[in-house]
Length: 191
Length: 186
Image 1 (spheres, chains in turn yellow, red):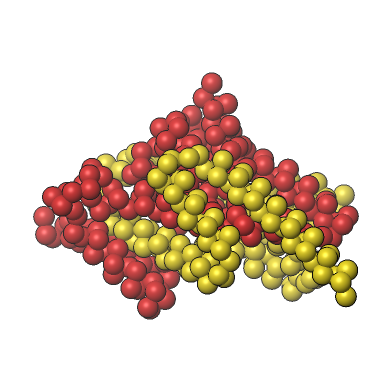
Image 2 (cartoon, chains in turn green, yellow):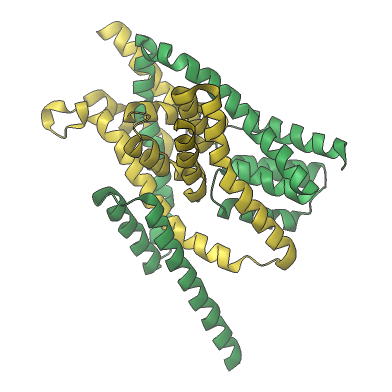
């Protein structure tokens, strides 16, 4: 196995994971920038599909993005070094913070800083939900709208376990996809 | 066994958070607050705040944080491992399937339907964070209504939506104003 290549994959994911603020979608763009535009190790179209895989799998998108790139470039060994690169920075940072947290928490200034920031975080979440929810309502797809309101009621009002909601909706999604594939195939037969 | 509990809890969080970012929030809440009581809602809110300010995904950050709080570095390692294991298996399997068949229709169909459910659950988790901030001791009554947090919230929304300000800046502003208020007005 090409050690130099593995080292490069590790350093790239380590670097991106340390300096990327703003969530998984940002890191995926930067991965593309690095491996498609700069290093030319992956072609553009394949990268789009790899990103789709990263986004449609469960888990953190930054980690998933590192996994697909690692796998594509160097197989299982590539996956391992890419994951290490993606995980080490947040692991170290949060470990340090968590040791200071108890001391932090009893400090008046830090306490009011965090409690003030809570309202800001809430606004950020509301804003994200608004953007995502608006997209779904605008799609005018009644199944999606029904899923959205149904899941909210199931989760918030009836306290149904999030895992069950996801499994049930995944089944609905699978049935819906099969239905569309069949309909497409039928239309194809007519012409 | 605390290590096994940590591992299994974060394994579920890793396996069922579709859509990245905030999508992990309702799952973390279900396991870490509701089921095991490892964190309070207020700790969890701080954790989300810290996650916003540092690089790294919310799910990984919570695994490391909760693991450290509950069982030290070994706990953090076990929780983080549990959190990424489903990704490793799922993503590698999909990447392998893709390299063989190059077809993702079914997967994308399922994902498309999951998105509205994920939005709904993020909204529910958001309410869980905001209620205790707006009402003292989470009691929804007029006398426990907190004016300042609601003001911060409304101003933040305007800064985010109208002025398109960076979320991190908006949050830090809220924090700093609250600090100033506590120092000079109390």
